[in-house]
Amino acid sequence: MFRLMAVGLVGAVSAAIAAQTVISYSRGPDGSDLRRAQSVQAQAADAATSPAAAEGAPAQVLKAADGHYWAEANVNGHEVKFLVDTGASAVSLTTVDAQRLGIDPASLDYSAKVITAGGPARAAKVKLDTVSVAGAQVRDVDALVIESGLQTSLLGMTYLGRLSQFEATQTSMILRP
Image (cartoon, rainbow, N blue to C red):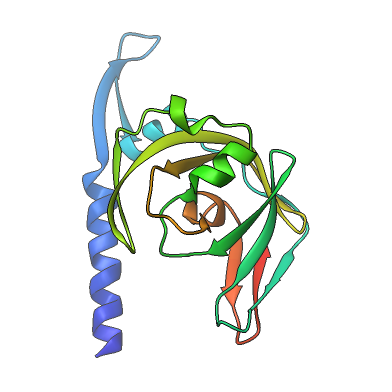
């Protein structure tokens, strides 16, 4: 059964890649028609600059007595305690932590709508220069300041997704730049 699912997945991915290929015609230097296959996905990737990969050394975040992974991070030169949350699509800051980072919560545009564990909330998009956990550093991190209802800041996927790998064990989480 697993093999059949794997074959189906490979077929679906292959079909998607083939569907993204565009054939275009142009004239060569001698006036002849040239046929080029260009991947729409490759063009889009070239056009958009991808964020830089994480840098530094691997970091270890120990599991706390409450069963969660709590990371002490350096954000723009200030210490912030984060709950590591692989289910959070973005690094999310409480208004108190945002203010400690020099961000004025009252001046932000809370036009983004998000769903938190406590229900719907309004959020403002911000950019953090650096987020570093025990040496695993990511630059230019997209983040959200949650207007209300967030009890602790969350280390979400806009940081974790830029790492080459992260893994949770029974006692710790390993972050690899």
